Image (cartoon, rainbow, N blue to C red; front, top):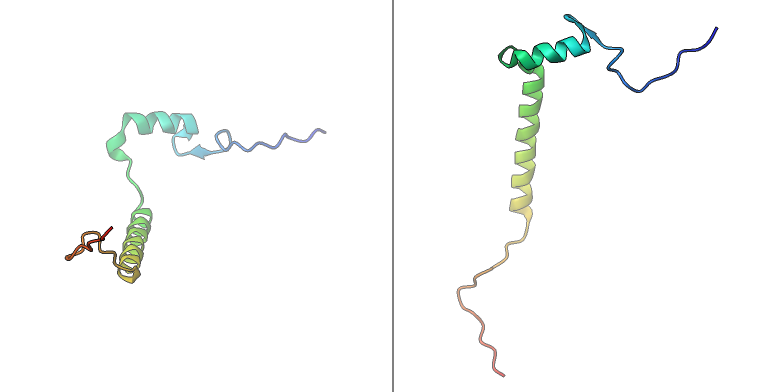
Length: 78
């Protein structure tokens, strides 16, 4: 008895409601309006974006300010 070859590809292993994965990909391509992300996924991504924005804001507030255009420019004498 020979062993089955291990494969990294899940394409041949995955079966979905409509049958094979290729059938599902075709159906999804033909019906883009019926395909939506799950509520759990969208909530997770929304939360991640909120955290990312909060971290960015905190970094901006913690950073030192740089005067790019100072009010009184320094005059250097040669």
